[in-house]
Length: 616
Image 1 (cartoon, rainbow, N blue to C red):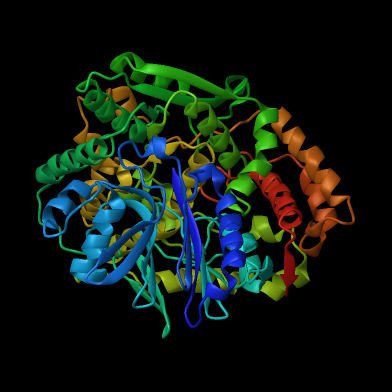
Image 2 (cartoon, rainbow, N blue to C red; image 1 turned 60 degrees about the horizontal axis):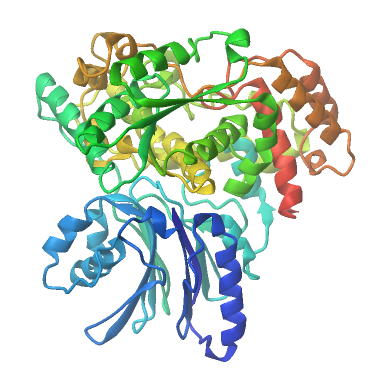
């Protein structure tokens, strides 16, 4: 696990304030110690500070503590990097005119940039964010991977670029204040737990978008999208497409399993994690290593589980089938209701924002348990977005919506809010503007009919909104636990290929995620391969709901709670006492009645903990 932070002055020098800026840089670094505590991992130049957070034990033979520095062609270059590249060796062979002193991702990026310029960024295969300083030319580049698997936030104030992998480091800088304007409030109340691409929620704070680079120089700030998903003709036959799907998924799992010690997989018993586990376990065993798997559930959940259209079955029977079929070294993990509830605050601290309520806090707890047994885990995350597994890819009523299909109505949110607050935010228009702005980036093939266009639209929205939210969740939770969680399905080559495969192939015979299922016949048992989708588990235990009710009631009856700025007290009290709808979500497939209570609890804690000021 790794991270970084820093600042870059575009028009003046730090030399006369060295001690102050060194202390400030160290303060920013220390906010991210969970990402690494390498000593002396800081560098100050005349107008830039770079700090690196590293746990070298997770980089294996790629240890770099200080920001990597090289003097080439008479100029000085520095880089700080978070994440992993999967094609470093290939890039190093191609860049053989340079003398490599290490085998690190950082050095490959520096030399590639020097040789090809910013065009080189699209050739990077991996999950990453980095800051690259061209010291003599006074240019600093911030770059993020194609799907935003690794975070990178920034603020540009008073000719100073402030940047970090986490918001908490940004907020440490005295130029950045924890202020929420109408835009930030809309991100939390209208769109949350999703966020608009590039929006850092706090006033003047932004996030480098997936597939984007940002350059700061004496000429100001410049941004460019170096890669995004585009429509292309698909020329392979159905049989060829299935074969290539199998090949691409297998290759993605293999390259993300290389050079990893103590590796395992998160196994839910669903098709996605089961495919990754089946491929990963076979690959790891060829190296003579054990393969560990981990499944999650909640104490007494079997007793209280309520089957519904969004979550039709429990995971345990299907996990057992996979463990028996693959003979993995399996660990069954459980979370109590009290632990789940207590983790809501820790989840906010991991994100520096309200998150996916207990859907998030549970993953944070489980990641910490998994870390006791493994350093790296493969996950099935992103398969639904890539292969079209969600209801909004095949249900006609969801395909016809003129809004984000995972939040088909704002009513569950607005029912609890004050009318003047709703009016001040203009919530409906904010959501619609965010939605239609995304639509402008989608291109279509001339041959596509209305149905195909609707599916492509929801596919693009899922990749750049819903998947990004889930990637944020996985990244923050695993980072807090010093666990490296890898996502083979977020492979750009695979995702681009499937994105452009005809929907007749992806939904052939009405079978959801048909290409993935057909591609792994005989590799994953049929009982699991053709299991009806059931998402990440959540608790149905009444004790958890009672903990939420008691906590939210205490908050809303406290006159000093910041929630009183937004919600109607009586409406919230009525909601607390009402029977909760456990099946119909207000976000995605999991966030229903109890999660609304948990989300409000997180908002209250967040505003108090971060001393947030409102600017309406």
